[in-house]
Image (cartoon, rainbow, N blue to C red; front, side, top):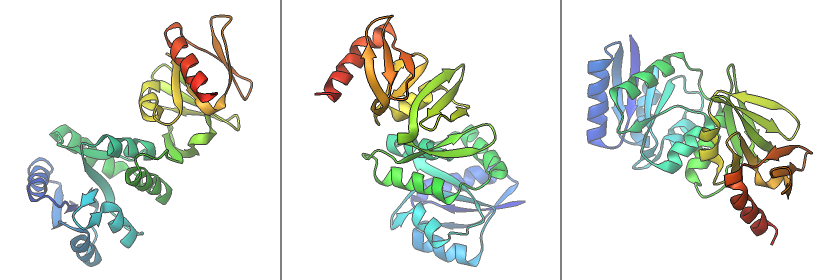
Length: 249
């Protein structure tokens, strides 16, 4: 048997999650629940479970406050969050799993299976998550990139461009490193478009700060500050020229 603790401030949501775990996942025993940071702290001081279901927004604080009170928490964490585009983007930046309310039984089952297998996110990834959620209007400093065998944290400013490779993405960094990530270019284009990255081609996403010039000949391409040339698609030419014009005014 695995043990679990649920921290959720909404009574209906807490009751529903408890019922779903008890009926659909009999291998998990819920040993305690809490509806606030203070309650959760009292519970976790007495005992820690194998899995902690942790809501982000609580009445007297956030789930991050609990993690700061217990920096050496041994529980595997399943974050539970309401449908909020900023929160979802933050989880993606930190490469940390979450369950989105309202969830399906399949979503919950997948999250539990991942929690059983996962290594806890390190403090830096949790900091990226916290910072991105608490200041959604600001450009995040860093992003966590999930490769086949590890998670690499890089500064957004160190990313020159991203290149599509089938359903995967190659990140090209300032120091010439290439990082192969098992997610599509569209996934990262959606994440990064608000932070000075532009999809200039079906296969290319570019950091606007790394562009040296737009060359109109030979079909149109961008010269980058590192000496690379990247093609611009026909339908993106007008948008690229307008954005570069604004940048250089």
